[in-house]
Image (cartoon, rainbow, N blue to C red; front, side):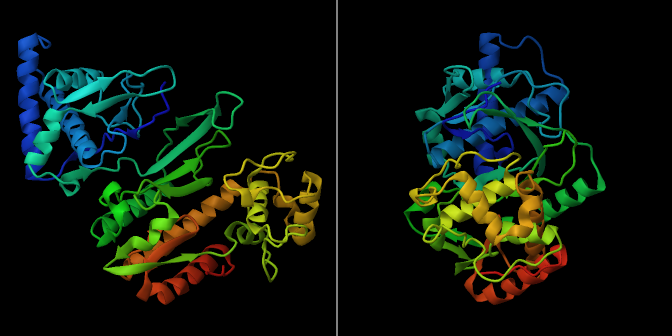
Length: 417
């Protein structure tokens, strides 16, 4: 199965959200029908259900093509064309079946897209809008606000299976978990929050705004299976919305209700949650001030969090993204371990057993409860894993909410900065 793409993924939940683009979809459906008749690609009339699914697929493809015209990125959209897996799961869009590749071929036949077959195993195929549909999108005055976005399943559960020795060499397998009172409640929360944020006044200033779809506000919670049992107690962070991937340097351009935003983060979240899991209060002072790490705080934070996620005794320093995360000169992994236990002797039971995934679930639960409490007060917040962005004028109120919720969930009040 293709799992890798160089382009933004095709969104099967995207559709026409206004008369402007619905007219374009109707034109596309009519041209595809004529193309099928002319090429004798279809021998008999579709059944009512098949016709509805066909129209849904055509609408989704045209909507994705319009989105690509309006937000070019690489100019293409990655798409999977393999046979649908059976049995179907909660992650599948029911309308998409065996005839999806035929829909793409027909839209290529009428000159609205160019199809690029996968260049090799492990990489997705791609579709690209042609000049013909580019002109139609611009002539119709279609904008990003004309597109409808269906988040689909908002509570996702998966496991990773390694496919090689490289750190990135793994395949994600989506697990169709059984419905429970917990999953229903989690989904209800997510859909309620998405509906609230969909109506919020969110803007982005600066040139970066030309490359961001500000209407992509649908979030999903991603849980992780590590024990071969569908239990939603690992992971749970939110992804999918436009601010999740916005580089930090551009966040000061975000406006909520016309106001600049302030970032509020829980202080040393994972370390404090680890203490809380042992019914202990974290010590005073900087929790990342490890012996031998003076001037290397980011490195200390990195290794502390790695040790909470590790499922084994670590022999090597983790792969880093910036120089200030490198191991300090003169340190070795045995010295690093001793430094951690010197500052945090009580956390010895928490290191090397994969506890971090459960702590992540607690973290995401706290953030979700904070956002839901803010929603009841009419305060818009944009979640960022261990913190959030809020309108500057509401920051003091939100800081109190964050403290109250963290204490209610964990019995410890986590500082906010």
